[in-house]
Structure formats: C-alpha cells, structure tokens
Image (tube, rainbow, N blue to C red; front, side, top):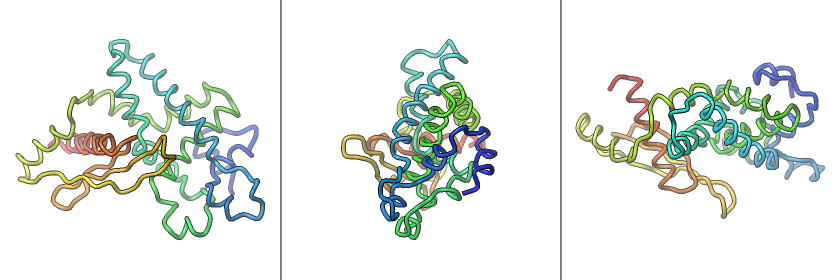
Length: 231
C-alpha cells in the first residue's frame, strides 16, 4: 500500500499510519487473512459516520445563520448521504487502495457504493483519531465542498419525487422508475441504495436508512442534474 500517495490524495499526513491502513482494510480481507485478529475498518467507519455528521453540521451552522433547525437537518442528511460519500470516495480513488478478500473483489467490491462510502467514513474517523476534530473537518470540507455547495444553493424540497415526476412527465412524457439496487448494514441501522431511471436511462442515485429515503435522495440528485443542464 502506497501510504504517501494516499496521504497526498487525502491532503493530510498521518502520525500513526497504522490507522490509515486500518481504514482501508475491508472486513472481507481480514476474514480471509491468516491473522483473523487484524482490525478492519468497521470501527473507524462507525466513528467517522458520527464525525462527518458533526463536521457538516458545524460547517452549515458557521457559514449560514439564516438556516433554521429543520433546514439544517435536511441539508446535512443530503450532504452525508451514501451517494455523496461514495462520490467523494471515487474522486479520491479510494477503490484503488482498499484491501478486499478475493470473493468481495471478484464480486465488484472495489466499485460498490456501500464499500466506498464506508471507506470514506473510516478515513474521516482515522483522521479524527490521529489529528483531531479540526483536521477531520478540513478533510470533510475539502472532499465534500461540492456537495455542500449544491445542497445550500438548491435548498430543501418538500417532495422531490413528486416534483421530479411532474417535470419528467411534462418534458419527456415519462414517469420515473425507482429501483432498490443494494442494502447494507446491520438490521437496526440499514442503508438502502436506489436508482431512478427515465426512459431506461439512470438519472440519479441516492441512499438512506429506508427504501423511501433512498428514493427521495435519488430524486433530489436527479433534480440537481437537471438544474446543472438548465432543464
């Protein structure tokens, strides 16, 4: 594993590089390893999830005092969604550095949204343990800056699925189709992944703690893509 290259991509240097290695070690790798006691990234993922929520809340709170509690909550959920985190992980090319077991790698594990999002959370957790909250915030702001900007500029829609359906029906004569593509996590805290398609073409992806939430976030991202294209 090229530690220096990963640190350069991430924009931070680790004092304890073992944390970085742990953050990039998927559970499938340790399950197949000769040393089953070797740590995987699940604990750091748990920690990073919490740090991400606070870091994004801190950024929203400090940069816009006009946002009320309800709006802050929804914007934070959009920004820390699995879709956003897997996108950041792809920009970081985390998949190239992740250690997987053969089975998971052969099943396309390097490109699974849930694996990439989890690894991003684990990296944030590792930075937090190694260098503290402000350093973790810097990583979050650097790699989720576009998602933060889009969420704040787009605002909160009460019913994005209805809004998107009205647009697609009036503009294309098509009704959006939502498909749950993946689910991961423990039974008490699952994450669902959804795609929304129009005319057989995928227009957005999203994730959330329920199927309905995943579909909602898929619609939100599809709407954002429409706005980018001016239609």
